[in-house]
Length: 92
Image (cartoon, rainbow, N blue to C red; front, side):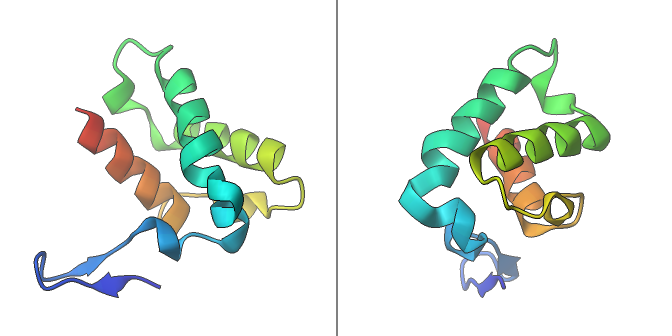
């Protein structure tokens, strides 16, 4: 699932670890992340979005882009959720 990195000394996740449906046509970087950024931009503090709100938004965005995607595959602790959290942290 993750990849061992000699630079970080722990398991690191990369976009290639995402479900195939989110990798097709670079959907993750071309559609998912821009939609998430637009949504997060409506918050006064987009770096402190509660997990429940982020999960709900991710499920809505994901299922609108990939209609047969299992929305339960997006929740705290899953790869998709962790990558979004990392993405948000790197924006700060």
